[in-house]
Image: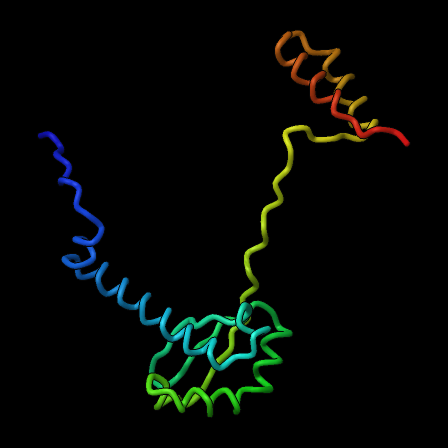
Length: 151
């Protein structure tokens, strides 16, 4: 019994014919449209900190990047609710919930040359002196050479 992969299909074809992908793509487009409408009613400074998470059963769930912005938006909730109800898509909006979800921390990109304290380098050199494997000893000595410069 051999495995024969299905022939590749174009993404547009998959989106038209696969029901799950079609509904997922449709929901993503709907949320993107609701996000644009929300941003049209938010103050410019708040736009980057507030995203539409869901809109169902007359309740809008917004993800906010931190507690400060959530508090700020809660104070403006009545105004925002009134303005959004004026839009056709949010005509039956009953309430807005805010959920704080910090943005993922950016990973720091470090260079290829880490720096070590003098005591860490001394420890690596001492460990290298007791190693018989020449490649491992050389690797430890290379690591020990990355020390921070003294003032």
